[in-house]
Length: 112
Image 1 (cartoon, one colour):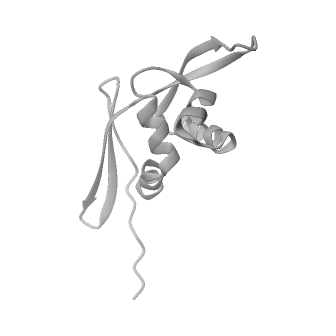
Image 2 (cartoon, rainbow, N blue to C red):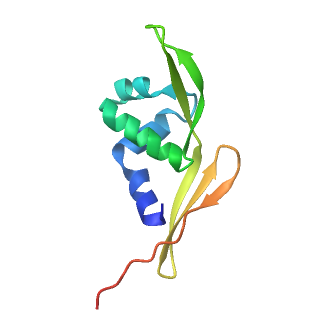
């Protein structure tokens, strides 16, 4: 994803709630959806997108009350910053591991 798409993902209400709620301990999608008032289908979509971008990580599995195994997820984001620099938009992520990742640059097309 380029910086523009990632910035939209970060400020998306559901994505932001998921990243904040799962920052201190692993959570299941069902728990996140119930506690954060997120529709289940959208919760799974956001989790999958955040996983694919490396902003959320599967930490393990827990047994539900119904006897099924479900995955738990932990936010990897400690800090995210958006930069506007020399006509480009970039995002900088500081992850839980201490690693720093930069997004691809995004340059807006200018109509004359």
